[in-house]
Image (cartoon, rainbow, N blue to C red; front, side):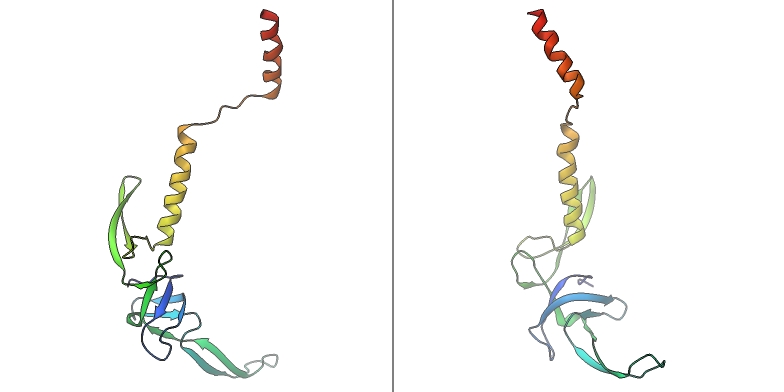
Length: 145
């Protein structure tokens, strides 16, 4: 299944064709996803306790995964998902990629940013000096001259 949790998707067929939304839940064995604001169904709820209120509740129903396409964050178009292997920390990772070249996996993006931010900090650590020692060294140098 090429659609994951929290992906932005476009519905391409059915009564909600053209709507976009975020994936709320996935059911890989059944091949279905639940999209926020799509395939709204009315359910009649009965009051089970004395404090509960009976009524009609609207909630999202699941739709088949073949009826949605992932929307790319960079180009903003619905796209078929391609898979490529990218090297990260000496390991090959399989990631989902858009036709424009943008990586669709949000967890991979976060890890890549964290790794890039950590590298410069390791290469050039900042030397720390105490304020008292810095002040004490300055008068000693003046006396030597």
